[in-house]
View 1: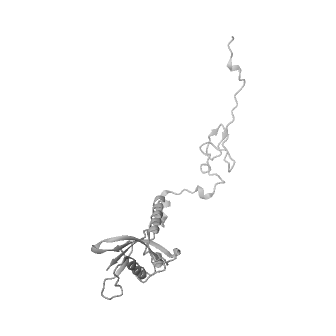
View 2: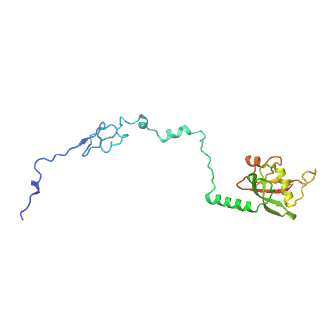
View 3: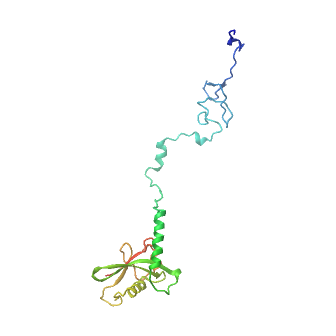
Length: 208
């Protein structure tokens, strides 16, 4: 087999097209066209982005150079309005609370004349002999005053109630933070004012 001369495959000078960069003062040529989709001019790889060749179609704002210090200065000495982080109950906690409320409703006692739509349920700690206490699930009407709720608990639990006698110890209702709740306000108002927490649903009756 005779030797084959590869030099005979190409005759004449090899012609290769190149593309000049349109960026000012740039002399780089590329073998392929790199066209800006906005201004339709050809650029080298270094200047192919709009910001790099100061594209005439680029919004003036994008050409501005803002240093990190310039970004920080406007907020120095001013209180930032950062939204408060809200701690939400997890799905498991909410489910547990619903289950606990269902159990409370099943075991709670109270005035049967109270409509179902008005009932609010609580675990109430009531005083017993020798500084002992019991926790009893009870329900009341949200329309009742705290004073009426105290009287109702005392009647249901057979507690001595001398709130109408001067000089005697008074039965008072405390919230879950051990703060005395004003006997004159209604239950629903105490809830609205944040004095009673329906997520906790725990009250304490005591003599003071």
